[in-house]
Image 1 (cartoon, helix red, strand yellow):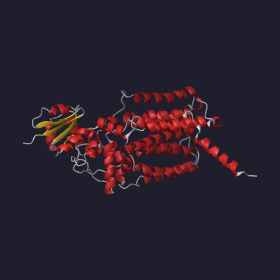
Image 2 (cartoon, helix red, strand yellow):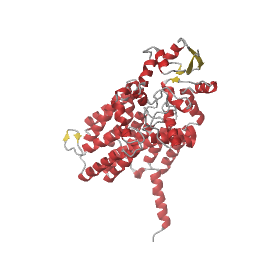
Image 3 (tube, rainbow, N blue to C red):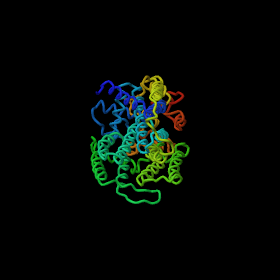
Image 4 (tube, rainbow, N blue to C red):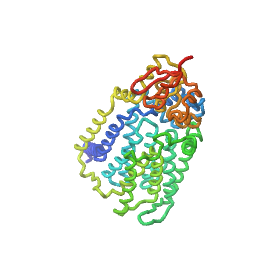
Length: 494
């Protein structure tokens, strides 16, 4: 006779077994690692203009089509192509102030590492070795973990890689998640363009047959190939599910190929530099994948090699794309090392020790989450907060030339004062402001030329800026404020 009590007990045991399994324990530790990693990364200079843009969209119920944050571009046409991410950032701030912003980052960072762990586990078939893949992701992600839209973009890239694997290895209907993914992605961050490259590579390689030594093609069967073709076509159409249209879809290409952009003038867009340990990590991981293939005689798939080559080249050209390299490379090396460590055996799992470790991870994440006072301290250390207070209390007005890294904060903290420049390199490059500012900041021309051209009344600079020393000796300028971080100069009234 069926005993419902016994059935309920068995069901509860199964639920507890899965909830407190060893893979879940590892995932919980990755979530704690995410909080510990980002807790001191609150003050990114670009956070503030993203937050301000989200506020404008929220308040106006519309996406701005011209630059409304600066006085130098003449309200040049500009569309915030990351508008959905910016809106989510502002929503987090409205919900819980600075702590809401930090929670936004913690959740996305934890989601990124856990999704990558799942992807590496499924790709390699070894949940234990997959933890290494998640740590590799963490290592390269540290180059860009901040409260910025790119974090959401890379979470979506991790989702795409997982969907492609599930569609290839399990049910082909997983591919149909790609169009809604790209509809969300195109409105969130320009990395959707890299996602389309990934999709194109996997699709093209799905038609390739043959092998050459350890390099093996793995063509898709007819049904999967057809499904992926339709999913790719719908994904391309989904890119236009945005409120802006073609210009938003084309933005990544315009950024890459517009000669006025001068991407190398922005540190994160510069070529890979070997003063960063992650550069050595890039070389070591790429060499390791090749050596493991040769020594262990593990096959490399054509689509893997193609994606690795694209991601490697992009990371070398632009150091910020080390982030994407980690996402692409981690599952590959996990597959290569899948049999280097005994795989996870559910029968040997122990619920109680796992539950203790999961609880410890959650407690660590809770106590690692920074208090609001600590977040404010991070803001004060990286921004001219005292100088802004002085400007407001002293009623200083007029056109202000600001340090590049101060611009984003000023758009948020001093919204009544339009900025000279901020982190939106695109609109300033298109209007020539970026070039003017670069020549001025590096003393390549007479400082008075730019000051007069833009009719500057005030200058807010960091103490280390070369122009901060020069302005002290320019006739018609006087120092009005100074602290350990910043200095304010004002034009003398005649």
